[in-house]
Amino acid sequence: MATDLTDTADITDIADIADTGTDTADADTSDADTADVTDTSEESSAASSTVVRTKPRRPSTTWVIAILAVLLVAAVGAAGYFGVQSRTDADSGAVSVEMRTQAVDTARDYAIKLSSFDYRDLNKNKDAIAAMSTENFAAKYSEMVGALTEIVTNGKGEATATVPHAAIEQIDPTKATVLLFVDQEARNVVAPDGKKQPYRMLVTLQRSGDRWLVDNVETI
Image (tube, rainbow, N blue to C red; front, top):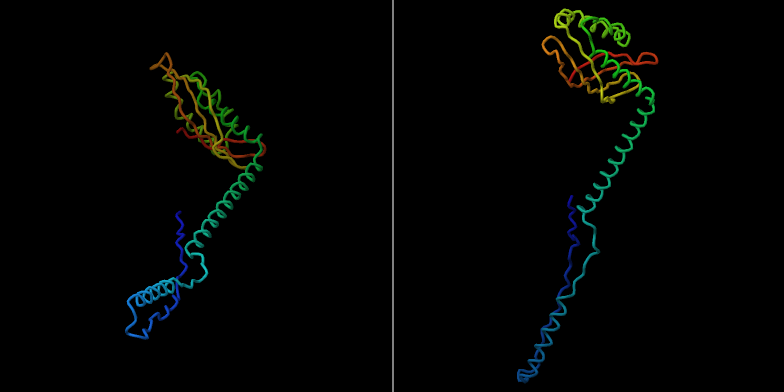
């Protein structure tokens, strides 16, 4: 922001220049005397023209406003910084390290169980997954398994999965969202040698007592 520092002191009240006319007493005065009088008159006039009275310099209004604006921005910035720090510290204090670790571990375990299956026993992980879910999401999972059972069985589908990376996206004392990178290797009658499929999964958790339950799963 450029600040206008133009000097605004007014130059006023120029002194009146005194009448420097010189009366000639005698018309017969010599040329030399007349030249001396003329020179003296011109010097007196020049000296008088430099006499200037000035008022004390006053700070520019624009300059003062600019300084106040800078101070205001600095104050607002400092308030915002400490406000954010305060909220961050409060949030961190409300969620313990144990709760964060537990959320990541729950989401990771759930993602592996959900992405792993064997057509010979599709109900293998069903009870474990239901126990890790909220009531509503457990019902959705059961519906999904029922709809896919025939397809997976006829295709002789099998899959295993690993989660190389997982991290908290958002967390508070009652809810958490975990982002996971899942690597799945699946095989079926179409791809008997197996095919690797990496994808990302967003798991939403709800706090229930002293544990986290899965309330939603999205692949992104």
